[in-house]
Image 1 (tube, helix red, strand yellow):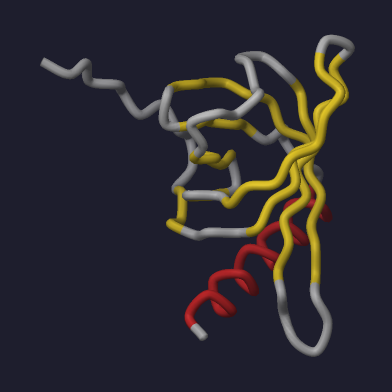
Image 2 (tube, one colour; image 1 turned 90 degrees about the horizontal axis):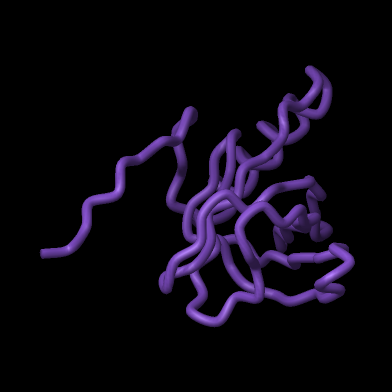
Length: 117
């Protein structure tokens, strides 16, 4: 019988595939790779990949890309890997100050609107 994993998220996640760069700057892992988010919210994201190089408790910088018109946009945020599995990795975002929180909300809103088109 498969093991049930309790959802411990503190914020809602939207099903949204964003092109993402993952930059690892840990002393044991200096790398950058690309993937797409499976879901994302104000508190974190899930990166689906069976061969991610990420380990629990690793700090990374994520760069989300939005191919918006008239010009592409990107959003950079620090994150920490809080869970890994064969399906991918769950990452948590730090608490943001008010201005960064509003910028991130705007970016996610634009990304959701762009995904509908």
